[in-house]
Amino acid sequence: MDKVIETHGLTKIYNGTHAVQDLELQVQRGEVFGMLGPNGSGKTTTILMLLGLTEPTSGSVRVLGFDPARQPLQVKSRVGYMPDSVGFYDDLTARENLSYIARLNRIPSAEARRRIESALERMGLAEQIDRPVGTFSHGMRQRLGLAELLVKKPEMVILDEPTLGLDPGAAREFLDLIRGLKHEGITVLLASHLLHQVQAVCDRVGLFHKGRMVLEGTVRELSQQVLGVGHRLRLEAEGDGIVERLKDLQGLVRLQEQGDHTYILESERDLREDAARAVLDAGGRLLTLRAEEPNLDEVYTHYFQEIAYAS
Amino acid sequence: MRREGSPWQGVWTVMAKEMADQLTGARMRILELLALVAAVGAVYAAVGNIRSNIGEDPFLFLRLFTTSREPLPAFVSFLGFITPLVAIALGFDAVNGEFNRRTMSRILAQPIYRDALLLGKYLAGLATLAVVLTAIWLLVAGLGLIFLGVPPGGEEVARGLLFLLATLAYGGVWLGLAMVFSVIFRQPATAALASIAVWLFFTVFWGMLAGVLAQVFSPLQYGFLEEVLAQTRMEIALSRLSPNTLYAEIVLALLNPTVRALGPVLPIQLHRAVLGAPLPLSQSLGLVWPHLVGLIAAVILFFALAYVLFQRQEVRA
Image 1 (cartoon, rainbow over the protein chains, first blue to last red):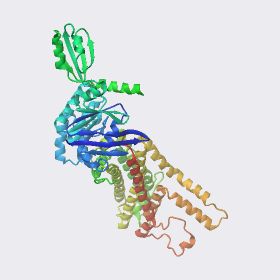
Image 2: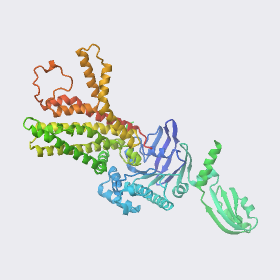
Image 3: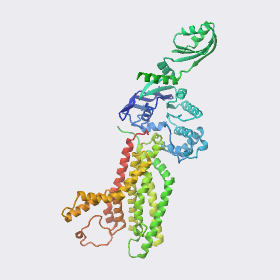
Image 4: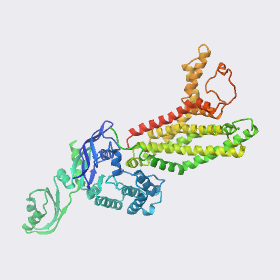
């Protein structure tokens, strides 16, 4: 497959400390990749190196086939970047701010005009197009930031904490937009520490800790690695002897009872069929059976707890 | 490691945007007001004095710039005072302002090099300065024409334009200094204060300090002429490290064609000289050429310094 981002042994040292260390990151075209990790774990530094805004101390980077340190203009004309707490020129209007960006990207003015209007329309800022950005709320600025990406029409976008400080409704809209980008075939790199949002939109995630990417994969894979659990079933059933039957299931890691007839089964493999059969074989009545997605929140908390214990 | 792509890409876009900002901002309103007051005040001061001796002076037009009448200063002293302040006002928040507005990483993520951002801002500052200075210059010249009714000669116009150019270079030095500080300090207020502190140092203290230093390093032991000369030369050399001195001497020589030397002159050197006879423009220019080159070099030097510092700066705030 077509690799959009490829780094090998990427390392950045700031004032003697490793901000990023031996990073091996691969992102496929059209993928939504989430970068997770606490503040100061190297996410933003990695992004800056991908854009050629800061030079790696060692290691190699390829973004869309270009070397960001040597060919930054090639990279930056194809990649849209929205920094955390995005800022605009307060005295200029939304339109003027975006048209400055369009001119820096050498988009012909008629085309730029069209793109700006449709992007602001799509972001729900059509009414505010000629208002100075100084009057905008935080959420509106974030949306203006995304509008800028739409004007640029990049092959890949990098979003650094895009939903930070947004109210839940706005954050959900934001996630819809990210899905929209994916739908258009745009690769998305999303750095965040809002886990459920990352889980909601990302195909794969990488967990960063102290400059290293310590875990990488789908949420299910991470869950398997960290919790030893890839699958989770919520089962409601009535009848005697169900518990014993369920406990005998192959691949079961943990069985929890919640209330009278509700059981949570955590397992390495998908146990839906086996669990249903077990209940029926025991002569019980199956009320509900639902597969629950593994929870990134738990993975994250568990992982960092373990690290805290280990140290 | 060579980088690909032109460092010029985006320079004109940045410059156009920055200049538009400067020209429409509140700062510009203040500068325009200052320009108006300066020009009207200068012409008022000069015209009254000049009218009384019309016909005696072959360089009437240049007197517009240099004549003062108590309590108003001459136009040149006013300009020498106001130009650094205007230049500093145009440059002190150039780079740190982008960081504070959190626009820096967003702008640098566009397909331009940092070179383009800095150069665009520098050129925009210089261009704005040129617009302001040219406006004042034209205002003074125009008002002078109206009130005096004497058209300037070709040489006078040429001297006047060179004076304008020197003023621009002088402003460019301070613009460069302000931009260097805007790279070094994250707070625009700190950058502005630092720039003004340097300006005050050169305006008020450097003249005295040059004298003291000259006495220390080149003391008068026996009172010989050689010693006096050496001390004077040293003091002049030291004081010329200040852009203020360079500019003052350029203005002196350009606007007063009778000035024939900018250093100590011995009576023996005046032998057979026709005192009071004006120098041709080329000779006056020759006199101040090193000064002019010095000022322009300082502009380039400050830009280079700001450039190096900015290139090494991390984008992360």
